[in-house]
View 1 (cartoon, rainbow, N blue to C red):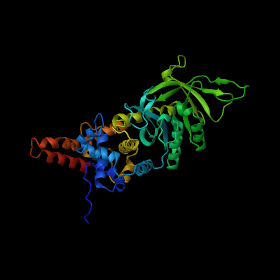
View 2 (cartoon, rainbow, N blue to C red; view 1 turned 180 degrees about the vertical axis):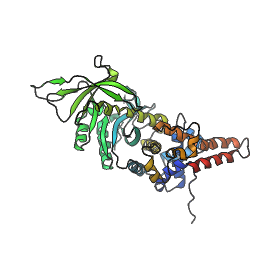
View 3 (tube, one colour; view 1 turned 30 degrees about the vertical axis):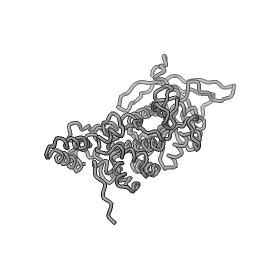
View 4 (spheres, rainbow, N blue to C red; view 1 turned 90 degrees about the horizontal axis):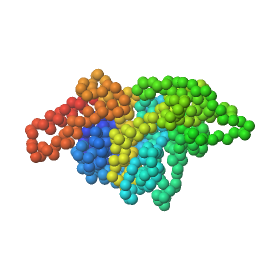
Length: 428
């Protein structure tokens, strides 16, 4: 009986990251498709359709579609391994957990769980598909954790049970705690802040939280007590890029102060502009004047996280109708997202031990790849992605040029490009 062949190499950091999943794939071709999809998902393609990815990475689009939709691999095992890699990279460091939903417009009537519903990130009701996701933030670096689709009641299948978005969020938080993650703060918008069951679970799990609430939020209290507000106090809102703006905060007291406290945040205490005025609820203790606004401000990473996974990595670019396949696609996008996060300085040191090779962006001046004139030393998540896209350019160039070589042979061109790939792989 012959020995199974080794998988064809792509680019070092992709092969090193995907090696952690190798045991989950009995078929070497399936593992190769996993690597190629990770390469395609982080590429600069404006739309990550499987035909476009196939052209970019030199793979058969039908084979990639089969891998996503029908190949024999277990999504839960892949997710378990991804979360294991995430825990290893965190090294028990506590992080901020962000809960929110995202929606994507989808036409037609054949895609599972597509319905006319409110799509929060678009701020409108339209026909689409919605999911609830959990992201982590550590030192301004985001990383994906878990997601679950929202199934409208009118779209339920015989084996489905209806769950509201806050109920899904409860499941996600409980799963993450059971996974062993250390959560130092939970952030969520008013949909979850106004959910009593969601807040009770956070209290039960002893998790600190800052959540948005509606302006007309009500609190039960004796009729002899009244609602009052403290005077406005200024604080410096510090943004992720280091810029600062003066903002204002006041506490709203329902009768007597309790363990759960209520605040109003604004940029202008006289005009109270709707775009920059928020009501929040928190169980954080102590003097919060200078810290609460910046804690809740981290919620902007929700939009940042979704932007990366949706716009940069193709969250909504699938052409699939069965949720089993859509869920696999989303899990692959989360995996590609984590692969980029593991190359940032915040998470990179542990990535070296989990993937078996140092991440290229952690090599700094010791690596020749950083001498590329477009290399960006400011390693945010997006800039790290841009650097990784430089590393895959020669591989993608070979894939794009090979079909032309059958029409106009240019002796030595492909060999030189493959030599360049080998040089990059050796440097990283």
